[in-house]
Length: 301
Image (cartoon, rainbow, N blue to C red; front, side, top):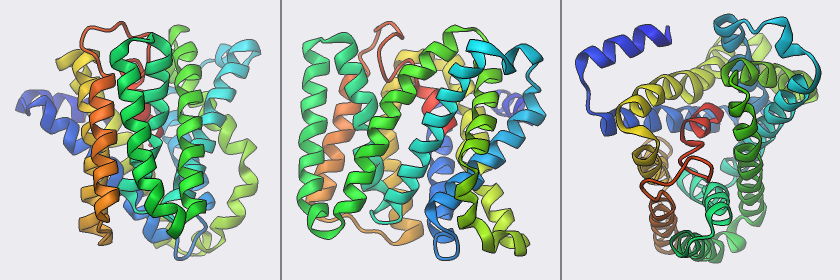
């Protein structure tokens, strides 16, 4: 399925930045569908259902061999998958309380921090300060309106940072996709208690279909498009394109969920967008933050 989509898009020669925006729109449309599901399912339940769907799709696609399910490789993959799943749980709980664009902007502090502490250049330090300033502006609005949502978005940011560090180790093993599949299966099994929040879905084909749609929109489509974009523009420019994502999330929240950011929120989101662009230093080796995990972020969402 992904290969067919890739071949068609390559043949059509769609500009890489446009493909990136399409992937980002798909990713956050999936998040918007998840928000709509929160009326009948718990946010944590939707996150688990999405993880289960992604695990099943990846299992059918990759079919990891026996070596992937044993020893240290299994432990690392499981830790990676659990970090991914908990990040998504925190993110979904956050967007149940915050506008989509606001939550995404706060969450982006995770990779910006990894990039800054990983390289310790003045540029990355300035990007971290800019991101922090954006979060302070957002906090000025949200601590009065939804302090729980603000804290949950920060938790998602911290888990994203952990996910990046674990993801790097998984990728260096040379079997990243297979290990990601194993990790997602392990996470879905360990977090099975969250399925208690999906009760209404099992008696409703429509809700189940929407739950699968969240996984397809947030994982399958963006991941396939990311691979095409990465081959065309490389990791450095891809990392720079990541700066479009908080703005894309804000636009999806506005158009689909009628979430209008307040003036301070809008300025804060803009500051985070600038910070992400600043952290994506062209030519930096992929051992840092945003460049290394550009497509990894899309896999998680």
